[in-house]
Image 1 (cartoon, rainbow, N blue to C red):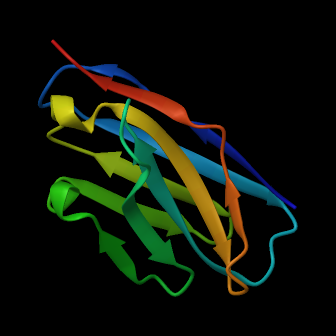
Image 2 (tube, rainbow, N blue to C red; image 1 turned 180 degrees about the vertical axis):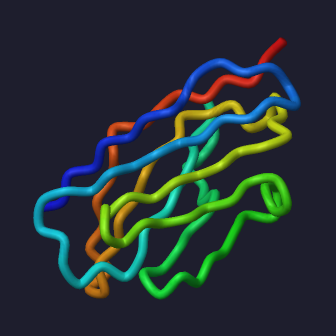
Length: 116
């Protein structure tokens, strides 16, 4: 099992920034990558950004140029720097860990609210 602890969510004004962190512990082996997903009320969960253990990243089109994902393999931690936040970024953000076997683990979620 892999346990994920997220932090860094909150309320921010449009145009502001937040940094999310996710620390993984437990059975950390055969990890393909870590990522962030989000789910807004009434919508499906969607990929925001993903990073492989080799450092390859991919982003949702809606966040390209505004969000940056990074990882610290030594600390088993992934970060999501979110800049130029928009009201449509409001959602619960979930950390994800995927093994090479496609086994997935999820964090409990952290609320991000962008509002004036």
